[in-house]
Image 1 (cartoon, helix red, strand yellow):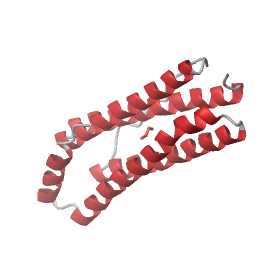
Image 2 (cartoon, rainbow, N blue to C red; image 1 turned 90 degrees about the horizontal axis):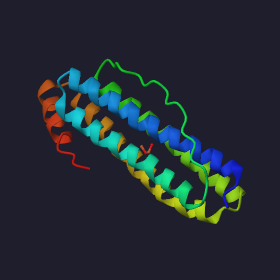
Image 3 (cartoon, rainbow, N blue to C red; image 1 turned 135 degrees about the horizontal axis):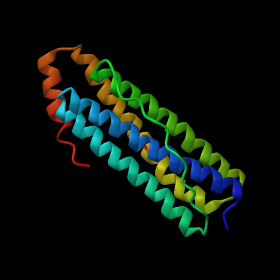
Image 4 (cartoon, rainbow, N blue to C red; image 1 turned 90 degrees about the vertical axis):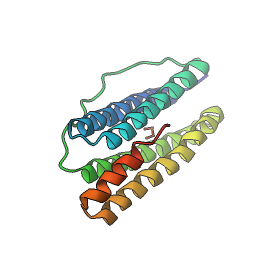
Length: 163
Ligand code: OFO
């Protein structure tokens, strides 16, 4: 049986994952409106991945006989100045999610909740990968230094993301 404290924290994480999905969807539609179709596709796939994270938390909470309680999702930002600014915000957001996952893992240890600890291992690994992937993209943008031809090629490269 999951503790009330752990259940509440997992419900808050479901909300954070759904917000992540919503934020990346907003970034995707922003890119689409600016005709960066590759960046838009990358963000769309990212949005779907975040939705799948929320679903993993929902399934887990149901599996341990917890109660999933959905809450309102915060309105995401819809406008940015440059493609780089969007990816920088995404990087910042992933660092924030990493902090959240780490404190959830800390709580699971505190609660002696071994199954939740084990479940969260997937997300600890996932966050290392997500932060690193976006950091690499930000790095590429900075190397290109606003060179239009290279940006066009990066847009094409990121548009090839399938999952
Ligand atoms: Fe981006 O990993 Fe979930 O939120």
